[in-house]
Length: 336
Image (cartoon, rainbow, N blue to C red; front, top):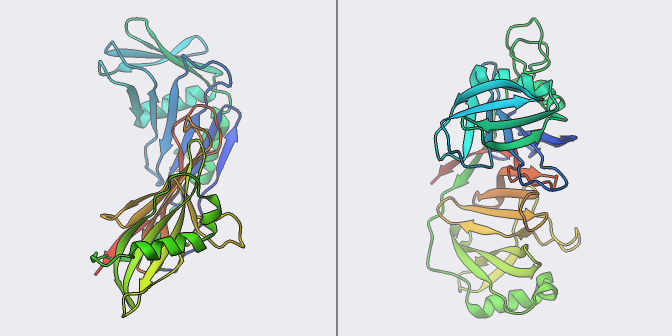
């Protein structure tokens, strides 16, 4: 799928008690253990990932500690289910392939899991309530149910899986120019924009070259559009210069997301935005709370006329996990 021949439909994220899980449009899936609602000093960060494909390996990563020994034990409901080597000083343990499959199936049958190093030090614990349902969800989404390649929903069939083709966004490569909107033009825009009512205190607006379009020089303009304790809002405009050098501005077009204050405002709004000229990518990172353990993030590439979504992640549960789940990805193909 290339160009504008596809609709953006991010995957969904589902929570099963103490676990949350989701898959992106390429059928790559991730399950994340959530932290306890109460004190979580010994909580273990645990993420299970599996790409699409009949032979794609499962991977499990455990983190949230610093190792001081070269061995570890995984204990589920008081019973050692796996042992292995780890690197001293590492902040994570990674298990993949058959070892990960064995561990995941043991997790699905348990209630609580704890990791202990070779010296007997406790590295952390996590609840397994909901892990079985999360892994079964991945089996179903990836089309493995009823096969020997499934984690939980196994059956007699040979290993099978659905196939997914990633969309390709074709983007015109920007050749920057020195022509940018003057200060007076930016002030006039800021005063006429719906963002004007949200701007308080010291504000800063920025403009970046988008090269030359069919009608002349183009620029990306990011307007300060209000701020909270940890989220900063930005209104996104595209500037177009005429032959005399006078600038006109219009709200930037996005193929997905970037919603404004309301449908009537028609102003694309990003949170904690950032523009990367090298990759022609603008990003948004909206935190549900200051800790950054929930929220949404997106990235879009400028294709010459609009911003096209290339990646998105979601964490809907504000329960301590910093591992947000990917729900959309697209490949980018630059052309001159």
